[in-house]
Every structure is written in C-alpha cells, then in structure tokens.
Length: 184
Image (cartoon, rainbow, N blue to C red; front, side):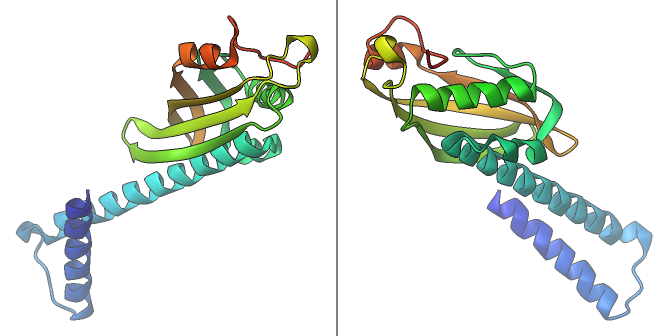
C-alpha cells in the first residue's frame, strides 16, 4: 500500500509541476489519465481515513458508553450481527451498549489493529470486564476476549457491523452457560 501511495503522490506531483511550468500536455500522452487516477486514489484513501476515524469513535463509544456520539457516525438503517446480540437499529445498539456497561461496570475495549479496504474497515479488539452487577446472577468472574469486527459504510456512515469472537472462551471465563445481556 505504501508503494501505491508513493506512486500516486509521484504522479500527482509530476502533473502539478507540469501545470506550474505552464507546459502543454497532450491528451494522448497519458498524463491526464495518470493525474485522474492519482486523484481518484487519493480520494479513496481520504475516504478510508474518514472510515477509520469513524470506527475509532465507535470503539470509544463502546469503551465509555457515551452512546450519543453514535448519531454522527452511524447510518439510520444500521444493523449488527453478533453472537451475543443482533441489533436492527441504532436505538437497539445504544440500549445494548448501556446494558453491557450495567452488567460489566469495568467494561473496556481496546483496538488491537485496524485495516480499511473495499470490503469495509476491520478492527481486531480485546474486551475485558467483570460480571459483577447482576445481583444474584452475577458470577463475579472477569473475562478477556479477543475478536474482530467488520464495519460497512453507506453515505459515509457505519451501516453495519459483523462481530466475531470466541463465545466459548467468554462463557468459560465467566463460568456461565449464557452471555448476560442486561442487569437484573
């Protein structure tokens, strides 16, 4: 990807220098096409940067439970597919995030790595938390689970999330047969 970026920058700068020197460029020499391709590549990379920034905010929301921040980065037709809970709207997602923080008061999510491409933004993450807030049903146990999420975008906002993690590991660490969803 660095090589592609360097090539795009080189082509863009070359075209810029030609224009600055007031040199006439014939359409059939390929410079115009190369400039257009470089500009398209730079626009695509800027879009990926914006998507990565949205996913970083997303992670911050999960970590802090400040769900109002989701309004600016989440599409109105949002869906979430995950082993613990699917969500078919932004309101369902917000409620779930708040429930998670009620169940695991020390809930934390870290970004272990991110990549963006034509298929969306992928984030590998680690979640930690202790099941201490569900009254008699609380196990008191802590969990540390890794997983990955794929975020797809529409109109510059997160439209869907696909979550994959080892539910067996979470269940074993929490010493339970079902992942808790709400504080009771």
